[in-house]
Image 1 (cartoon, rainbow, N blue to C red):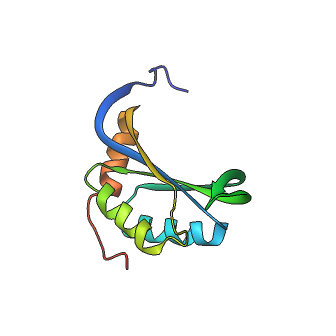
Image 2: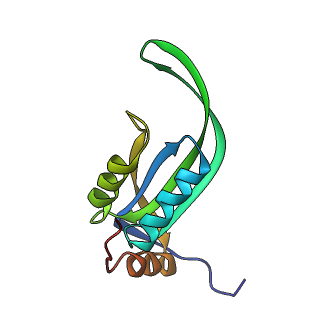
Length: 121
């Protein structure tokens, strides 16, 4: 590591979106579409995770794969719309939270990675 300390900058327009899928292949496919479409800078698939929940009044447990997406506030509506149109669940978990602090280099990369668009469909 160099002599300079890692500096973080405060940002207002970066978002992390999280959703889950029943298998990693679907999560990988969606991740690819979003990254190649420049709607997100980064997509991370992790899992399996064991989910426990009530669905239509029944106790359920299943293994799922978590997809975490890094994008901008400007791109968020298009990301949400793509997830809604391609998600296999009737009621998918889709959450979003602001990213408040990042390294300056990461901020520049995220902006560049989502700067122009191609049709992701």
